[in-house]
Image (cartoon, rainbow, N blue to C red; front, side):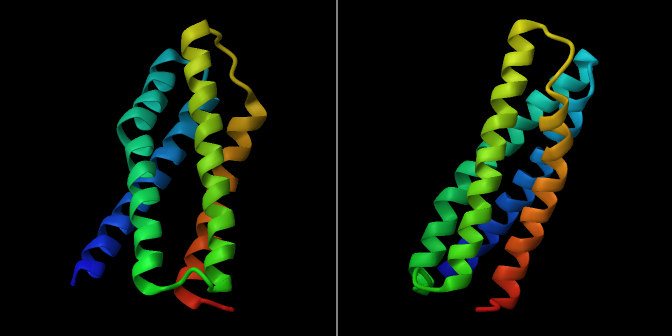
Length: 133
């Protein structure tokens, strides 16, 4: 029963993290301060807390289910690291843009962030549901 509760919390946190990353990547593309503020709030209030919960609940589930030797989990973890690193880059860039007052963000980072997030999420979902190996 505890396992199912942790799994539910993990899934909710993953959904909130992805929503936050989408908001950060879209808001960071725009030069308007209001959109940047929304992107920063998505980070502070949504993505960052969710990422902490993901990293606490995910390994807990892996230990409880004894999955550490499963190849699909290793592939999943690579993409979790990609999403985590992307969050860090987006967060740092948005913070820098806010601090420096620069109106033009790094367009390539924000343009690539959304597809990287969505492709990584799709691979993670396939690994968890299908467990192809």
